[in-house]
Amino acid sequence: MLELIQRAAVHLLISLSGVVLATVIGVVIGVILTRVPKLAGPVIGIVEVLQTIPSLAMLSILLVFFGLGNMTAVMAIFFYSLLPIVRNTYTGILALEPALLEAGRGMGMSSLQILFQVELPNAIPVIVSGLRISLITAYGIVTISVLVGGGGLGRYVYRGIQMADMAMLFTGAIPICLMAFLTDLLLNRLEQKLLHR
Amino acid sequence: MVTFDNVTKSFSGHTVISDLSLEIPRGQFTVLIGPSGCGKTTSLKMINRLIEPSKGSIFVDGQNITKVSPVDLRRQIGYVIQQIGLFPNMTIEQNIEVVPRLLKWPKEKRHQRTRELLEMVGMDPKEYLGRYPSELSGGQQQRIGVLRALAVAPPLILMDEPFGALDPITRESLQDEVKKLQTSLGITVVFVTHDIDEAVKLADRIILMKDGEIVQNAPPETLLAHPANDYVREFIGKKRMKANYDVDLVREIMNPRVVTTTRDKGFAESINLMRKRNVDSLVVLDKEGRLEGVVTVENLRAVAGKQHIAQIGEVEMKSVPTISMNAQAREAFDTLITEKLPFLLVVDSKDRVKGLVSKTSLVKALAGVVWRDDEDDE
Image 1 (cartoon, each protein chain N blue to C red):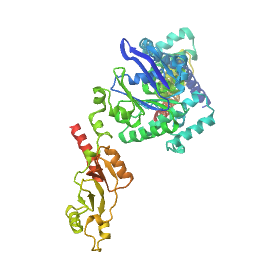
Image 2: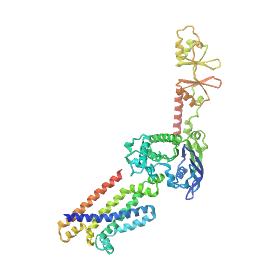
Image 3: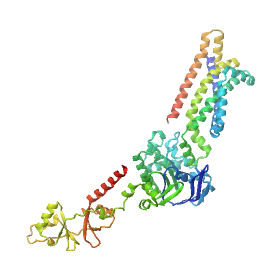
Image 4: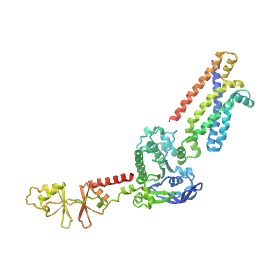
C-alpha cells in the first residue's frame, strides 16, 4: 500500500514537473506571440508538430539526450504540454475585449501593468483549460515512460502486462484513471469559477 | 484647460484632422459632435495621447502634452469609453481603485474615496464593493465606469460616447448624474457624441465637426438659434429649431377673441354677455380700446343687491397684468405659471387689448409643436 502511494506520488510529481515547466515557458511564449503577431504562425506551427510525434518516438529521441530515468519523461511531457498552453495563452489574450485594453491604457497603465493586471488575469480561464489537457495527457506519458526507466504507476501496469497479472495491472491502471478523472473535475471546476465572476 | 494648436492628424496618407485649433475652457462641459468619421473621437484621444498628432501641439493646463510621459498624463485625466471596459476579473472596489493604486495611494485613502464615490451616486458601498461587473446592469456598470474616471479627482475628464450603448431611460438618468457631478465638482469635461439631444442637454459649449474641421463652436442656445450654415441646420434638424424656445411670439399664440365691454354698458346686459359667452370675467375697455380693467363674476356678485348700479363702470374693477404682443411666448407662459394667473391680457404698443394668453394657449402651443414633429417624421 505504501508502495502504491509512493508510486502515485512520483507519477503525479513527474507529470506536474513537466506541466509546470511547460506552463512557465509556454505562457511566456504565448505572451510574446501576442506582442509579435508575425511569429505566431510559425511558432504555433512548430509546437503543433511536436504534438504529432508519437509518444514512444518522442521518449526514444529524448532518451538520447537525457538518458534513462524520470528526466526523459519530464521533458516529453514538457514538449507535449507546450502546444495547449502556448495556444491557449495566445488566443486567450487575443480574445479579450479590446475595450479592456483601451480602458487600461486610457487610465495610464504601463504595458506590463496591462499584461499582469488585465490580460493574464482575464485569459486565465482559457490558460487553465490548456493546463487541464496537458496534465491529463501527462499521466499517460508517465505511464509509458516506464520503458525509458521512468517511475510511477506505469511500473504496475508494465509488470502486470508482462506477467499477465490482472490484479497487478489494475493496481496501476485504476489509480491513473482516478487521477485523470479527479484532475479533470477539479480543473474544470476552477475554470468555471474563474469564468463566472 | 485644453488647447489644440494647429493640430493635423493623418492615418496612412488620409487626413482625419486638418489644422485644428481649439480652446476648451476650464470648468465647462464641452461636447464634440458630428457624424461618424468627422474626427471627434480622434481629437478626444489625442488629448490623452492614445493617438499622437501628426503635426501641431496640444496643451493641457498650459503644458505641452508631449513633455509628459503618456502614462503619467493619462493618470491625471479621467477616461470613460462607450464599451465601459470594467475589468471582469476585479470587483467593483478594485475597478474603481485602479488609478489610485497606480498612483500608489495608501489603502485607507483609497477605500475611503471609493466609498465616498459610490455614495455620491447613491449606490450603497456595502452592497456593491465586493461584486463583480458581470453582476451589474449596463447602466450600473457605466456608473462605475464614471466613478472610476473620477477616482483621483482629476480636473479633466474625457468621455467617448459613454452612454451610446445604454437604453434611453438609463441614458437620461446617467446624463443627469454626470451633468450634476460636473457642475458640483467644477471639473472640465470633454464629451464625444453623435446625438444632438444629448449634446444640447449636457453642453456648455458644442463643437460641431465635419471632415476633421470645426463647423461651429458655440453654446447650445446659439447653435440652435443661429446655426452657422445649412450643414449645422441640417445636423440639428428642423424639428428642434421649431421646438426651440424663443421662436414663438405672444401674438402667434394668443387668443384674439376677448370678451370685452365698455364702462357705459348696462349691468344686466353685461351679465347676459358673460352667460352667453360662457366666461367669468369681462375686459373693460375705454373708447379707444385701451384697457381699463377687468370685472369678474365675484365683483358683480358683490354688488348684485345694490339697485343703484346701472353701469359696469360703477363696479369695482380688478387690474390685471398685461404683456406686449411682441414679447416672447415663453415669457408669457413663465409669468402665467409663476404668478398663478388665470390669464394674461395681450396689448399692443398703444395699450390696446388685442387678445389673451391662458393656460389653454400654452397647451395649444405645445400641441402645435408636437404636431409639427409628427409631420417631420413622416
